[in-house]
Amino acid sequence: MHVEPITCLRPAPERAAEFASLPYDVFTDEEARAYVAEHPTSFLAIDRPETGFDIGYDAQAPEVYEYAAKLLRERQLDGTLVRDEKPCLYLYELTTPDGHRQTGVLGAIAADDYLDGTLCKHELTLPQKEADRVRHITGLRAQTGPVFVAYRDSMAIDVIVGAAKQGEPIYDFVASDGVHQRVWRVAREVGVGALGVAFSTVERAYIADGHHRAAAAAAICEKRRAEGRVDDPAEAFLAVLFPANQLRILAYNRIIELPEDFDEAAFLAALDAAGFSCGDARDAAVVPERKDEFGMYLHGTWRELCWRGSSDELDVTVLQDQVLEPLLGIADPRTDERASFVGGVDAAELERRAGDHAVAFALFPTSMDELMAVADKGGIMPPKSTWFDPKLQSGLAIRRIW
Image (cartoon, rainbow, N blue to C red; front, top):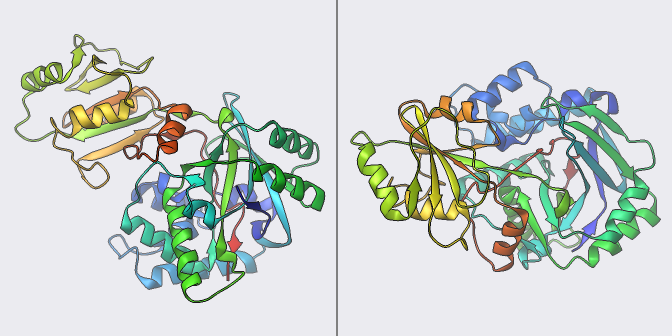
């Protein structure tokens, strides 16, 4: 891996808590508008600039991205953002209310690592979403939300990171989602160099979250290469790299709208024929405790489903291939509007969202080992297979690329 220091815009320490926000893609349109209305100077207003326009306005119109650039300039003029001119790496620690803690290295990854497969992907991207991030980066002339990257554990990196965290953090606050955020600046050349050398021994890393951001950054890099640009900042993109053993994946559940002619008895019989043992209906929620177990909420009751087939496949793949496509007609869950995804929420939320018109499936979380195994083989997982918790805050580092 090629990891390099960055110069960036970043919030003044006293403004960080009010400016930083969760990634653009964890909000629905309604949620994003509500958040920006309550936090008008937050980074989400820049990350989702369509919230500054009327509902129904073309979110990818040129003036939308021009508006994002205007907001970015305003945040510099009002002192929210300051420029860190010295190339640095940063250490980014997140601690959840229940005590889970993870620390990553924030810097830039070479675009070539993505293009040559050193940085592995495990999901397909949607052209429209990728185009949005290309236009966003181009409009701001900056990379904003970092790509969330995992690497197999390295004692050398752990030692360097641990030593660098002995100083005072530049940020120390609790974000709106309750996650404690701390960031340290690694500015001394010896520290930056040591981390660069340590990462050079990492043969392969994995995109945990941010496939569209990575694809967009790589597309811009290739375009600028074709224009003959050399030594261009777009040759690398913003990322935070975490050791895999520190990461936590929660279930990413599915909700599927039912067709008008849905027959519950026929559906249960089809599940049995497909290889699932169906438990009796019950009021108590079914939360899977192991692989090959699923919870199903349908018409006000829960059932436990147990897969009787091979355990070699991911649970999300079994559900997609054996149930969602053949029995419910969801051939492409990335684009089918009848399919929605709910990550890291409790059973009551699944019940609320499913109501009487949909069926909800609760899954056992995909593991990091499963993710890396699929990526190592060049495979692709079904969309929304992993919900990493906690989510990174966006806006803590904004990397200008021209």
